[in-house]
Length: 242
Image (cartoon, rainbow, N blue to C red; front, side, top):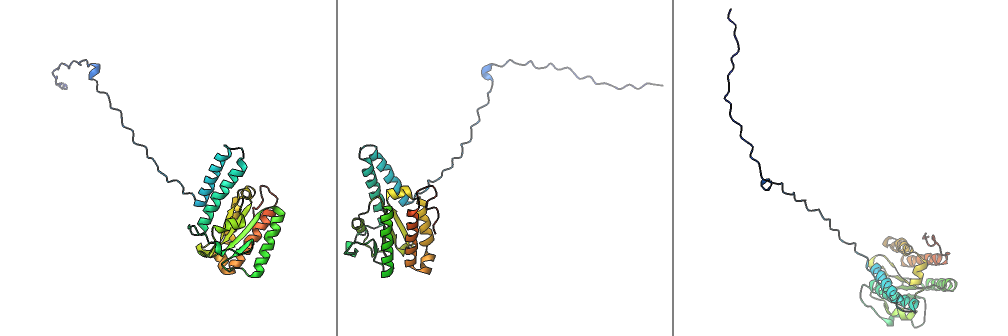
């Protein structure tokens, strides 16, 4: 019996290529990858309300002067009051420099109603409340009821001798909310600013005064202010508007 063996095919041996030594200079180094530019998010600065900007500017310059002169208290208070009052009156009077002293009453009064919102009896009650409040607390509340452009405007500053303890309450429904305030610097130290916005929001909104009348809004605001200023000064004073 014949034995079959597998056949093998011999492949020719080919010499291997010698590895050529490479120079370090010829080594191709990888280029550094460029990092993506970071996404920069630009956000617009929050627009400050003009009244708040005026208060901040007044406080800043008052502080500058206060640190430079010995009579700092008087000057800084007067400067802050002048800046805030002028800006407030300009805003309340449609941003125009209204100044009509001929609309002022001949005799001094703490309540000026050129718009005719209040009855004579209501004016008497408000004047008495304001007089008692000033005697008890030293704060001077002044009420101006107007209907722009019929307003004495800037003339009320000299008429009322507005100072750092004065609160000027302007009732004007022209721009929706009927209640606007200008608060003296010393009042601002004792009464939180949130109180004034609460009074304005509760009694000055259009739904309130259109339903109950402009006179009701004015009387309610004066009552709330009187209660607040009679509260003992503390962390929770004027925290509620009743």
